[in-house]
Image (cartoon, rainbow, N blue to C red; front, side, top):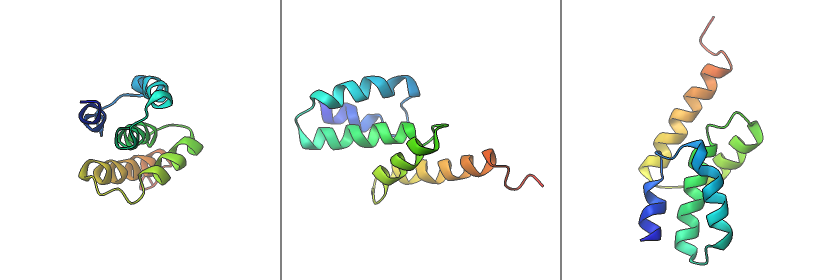
Length: 89
């Protein structure tokens, strides 16, 4: 049940959930659930305004085969490009 809930977070969780996830991660003992929670947290932080958090999130998501993660990284890259002003000149 915890695993399914953690997997459901992919691509749908809001930044408000990040603190709750961090707290839950500190007490999670199941490796599979923990990994899913870490991916969920990274999927939130990949769109952070903090470049260090974004980079850490991208590194955490690197190599994931989850379709939702791949779409999120693609979407995040496009968003980051817009923030930096690419294509606006």
